[in-house]
Image (cartoon, rainbow, N blue to C red; front, side):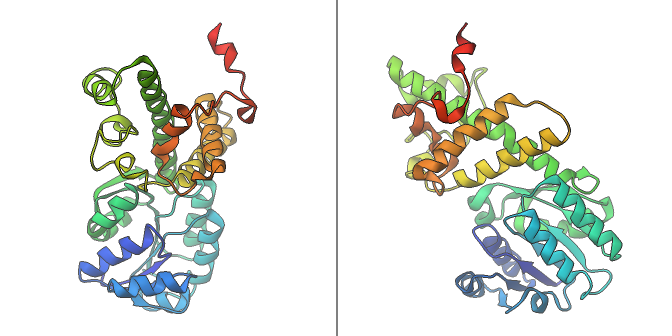
Length: 309
């Protein structure tokens, strides 16, 4: 699988395409923004002027786009202009319904397809250490495995088409909620006179341990490599965490499930993003608590006094 088309060369797609090129693959990329096309070309990715031009002769087409509507539009355009065995892979984070609709389009066109969203953020994309959560046929996952290995370290087959996206939004639902709880704990510790490093030393080996704490501590100066120690430069932008939490809440509503913690987490991140922090790392939400911007106010529409009874 040497000729790969990569559609969407943004913060995640650009480094992923570059890693494929560094692995010796012939990668032809397209993005609506010329500056992104030029940046990818500087990293060894051949530049195409249209998505269709990038796809000509490709053994696999990878899309990394911001929303389900964009994925469906690109797939509709490309499914009928490539060879029948061209593998379509979507690594965007989109709603489950759109992911399943994309699989239906591919199936109707007689083309193999995978939904394969990623975890690891921009740092993981640049380092080639992403985790891929794959939905689709097992044989297609195995066929794509060498490509995923060029861009990441972990490849997990989650089941039928759409379940890769289901795994991604459930994972980030947990991540968003635990980051808020972790941030609240550090804000409380500060008010009580307990240092960040002391709380980290205790919680990282106790029952409060979580990935948000031990790999991505929101308190600055605790973990040198964490965004918190670099003025919350992403990382994983707060706007993207908000997007994923909203996707999780939409999915829960669609199946009739009540998820109050995820709903509250989305409201908190909505306020954080609205305060001008959309492009900061999502762990920067700790500053809302430490600066006394009380997420209990009317913007959340939640009566937290009920929880104090």
